[in-house]
Image (tube, rainbow, N blue to C red):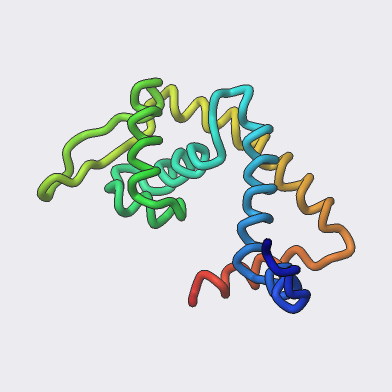
Length: 146
């Protein structure tokens, strides 16, 4: 038989920065994914498409950094998007590096997705009404500097 939960421990878990951040990230991801799902795209893929537009010809490592995605997840998404005709992959200048670009189909898809992403942004900002969304963003950015 296990002991009753320690109230102090439960309070510590309830106020844990990482657990609350993960929970919030999952909720946000579900919202954005729901917006993009009719187009067969996840928010992670949208971030990769946006990073490709911002840095054409970037390496997978550069794109991972720009889209805040781990390299292996990004590689899987790039492979999928290449199969769908949205991304063109080619060997990089050095070693086994790969570079990627949006195809015309990928550009057109991103053009269709940006308004949906903006709607999701507005929805989430409206949800934060009465709270300082800019302060929230500043705090998140500060946390990434740790």
